Length: 320
Figure (cartoon, rainbow, N blue to C red):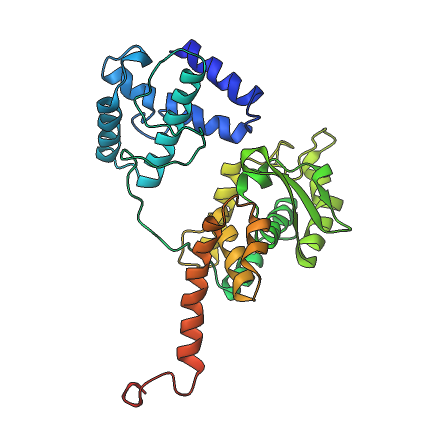
């Protein structure tokens, strides 16, 4: 199975132009890892079940795997992602003629994202976002007297100003940003290229970081990455996540703050400000408008709160 899996990864990279981030996720979901407790990868489960050939996997094995994941405390969203990775792997096996049927439903078009009876039903949760006051407070946390502080300030500004995914920020190189036009060229999901924008505060923070702090972190090394760690290497996504959690804790923000929360905040604040849903969809790089529409629920809640707090006849006389 390892040989077939290696061929599959090569296919994703060469034929599907999958990003290193996507390849890492597929590798983790299928092969698994022991970094955080017992391995939860699909192949690790097959090994536990003494199944040594992917041809021996049937629908019951897939169901048993999902049940096993639930026993391990894996969240539904992670289970759906792992199921998607398995579906993609078996789609490859079918295309290569290594199998005649798949144990997991695959639609005729071969498009990703199709649901089946195997898929756990996800709980609908409104995205967590920060208030304008929380964002302003968070931005004051980095120590601008240090290169890392200037980097972190520029990174937070850019996350909030652009709505980029952490994987998109991670792969940014110097040639991807035009400070004069305030445009950023990124490669998003599905290897789709798009142009997104940034405001003046983010541009100024980036200019200051690039002019001085990045050169100090680089320390005469060569690296095209915009955001660097102390060793002059590309700052990892894990490093970005830890940095945000640290500053949020210091700022006293009682929310689980990670890069995607700033993406949610970007979208929510745009819609609250009157932006068109289609424009927000384009800036976020969503292929489907339904992915963007979840933010309208947030803005409706916000609109209701503002209405109830400000309209003179919003409350009944007895509620005053």
